[in-house]
Image 1: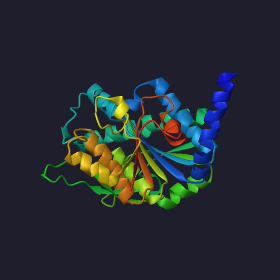
Image 2 (image 1 turned 180 degrees about the horizontal axis):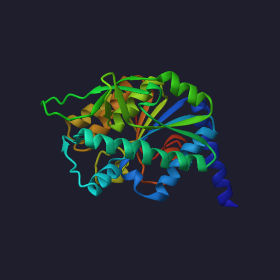
Image 3 (image 1 turned 30 degrees about the vertical axis):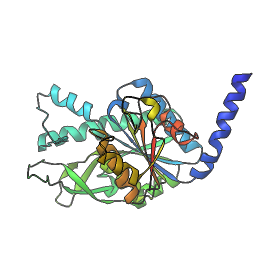
Image 4 (image 1 turned 90 degrees about the vertical axis):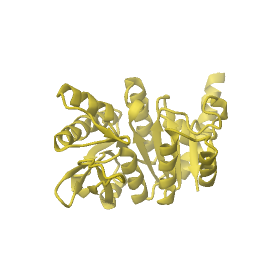
Length: 287
């Protein structure tokens, strides 16, 4: 009986958060290590489905780097990177599109649909969803068909979410030059969150969030302001691979997203634990 009371308390704790988010958009960037464990993938899609059923409008943006690399290896095509960006030749771009839009996207859509929701898979080419231009590297290195977002078809996304659909988006854009572009999924998620004026932008990654001591999980910071992040970077408390993650959160805030989150996507039900509980399990960034 005690367990039942505890479950009731948990549900009541979630109620005010459900009320605040009802009718609002939550953009979830999902990729990397969160895509490796089938059991974890299942709980992520359960969370996304639950959000829709309680009146929230989730939009999923997925990556797929490991799948792309595996396919390139099978075809004996070398993977080349520059400053963490995949150099994308015309040949590589064909594989990127095939894997992201043809394989990974449809796997995610199928899983959500099997749970009773209505997911619809898209890439930037569909109805002009993501207009892009060639990304120029600051040091002059030609990155090939790597792009930056210049415009999002907001009307399409709003029509889908308002009609019970969950958009699942592969980070591929199209250019006015007729070319297809490979775009960083974090960037796409941020641009889409800004376009739909999302209440939340969530980055599912393989770390718990921002810690005062990276080696001590008890020092996790649940809520942090942008100004505090800059101070921690100066003090070298935030460093290395955490810097691009927090800068992605800051960019989302600067573009009009209310709150951004860094959440450990390798933990079961990380999405609902972060946004429907008082303490959360990750780091929420606010202006």
